[in-house]
Length: 513
Image (cartoon, rainbow, N blue to C red; front, side, top):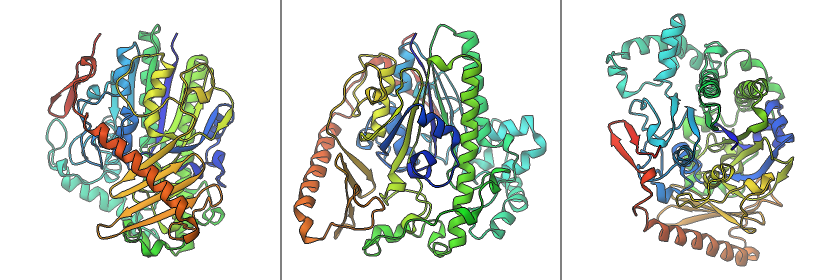
């Protein structure tokens, strides 16, 4: 029987933050254990270090120039196949739970993910509006106002849900009662403890729904494999772990972030990025920087414990012998490194390098130093499912690096990371070249990561490194020339089994039985 696949993603978590990747804070014991008994990839990078674009790449195995989701709040195109559509067409039952970020935030979430190929789905995303909030109202009404207060104020609050309720005034009252005091009393507004019990938090809700799907699958479709995407919304900002995770790590014990590198202040793109969420004003406070990490690691530990629930359930149901677990993130989180918060146009390690841990039957213990990209998951899932003919994609399967007999990979590789007018090249031999296009001038960074892992010594303008810079520039230009050629074929007809049609917010797939 083909293996079950559980694809677990966290939002905004860098590889270097996890203990199994050398992080100093032991906030991920379950993931550390999975990594120790499976394959850990040390050089996995986000193709686009921003939520929606990189999630579109994970779904499709296509670069942003192909799928067209170049930034947040764009819609995933109907003519680009997803791994869920391909897996479903080849016998898998597919489920997706949590954050997918393929609907503009200004719009209500779609009721299903049929248009992306998922048989069952429950969405809950950054805004927290939708299924999670509705579940709180139905099952835990005494916490409804508190839960509503944690939601984002979105345009459709004036016409919420099937009955078109105007929630604006109730949201404002709830926010002022439950969240505003927490923000006011914090040293930095986006950093506070969640008032909700952990059992009612989005993180637990996502795992509850995922386990429901897998449990029903066991009973109803025992002869079929399943694919389940467990997609956490955290540890994305606001940095608000619930008790007891809010004080599980003492801020005094947290490390200080990596300092700014030489020449950073001269690059306008980076100067603008420091103003995100007013972080520049608090970035020199050791207390804020340490408390930020303490809360962040609290959220990581909460997620880790919930992953532990999944692992324990698989063992209890005796499914662990035929289930592959894959853990990664959509991108990193700077956590104050180099004076930055979150992710995006700063292509430092904490922003672009993601954890990738694979565990399960046929997965060997070990560490891979091979370059891996968000582009590669599509091909890998199809490889594990023994699907030989799949739609066009740009990535390569990394299944062989995990052990077993699978399709081979290219031995030498380089990756491109993109966002806005920022372009980065990463090479097999440890170089990072980044260009910041300001229109009237292009600024550059060049780091030899093997010798300078903290990215402190910018070699871009140093005379003795000009030959190396020219070589890297040529390689980056070649990658983007190739992407330009592929772009010409963006709208060619595709296999009818993966074509979709549009029906308001719900996109209905046309998939063979």
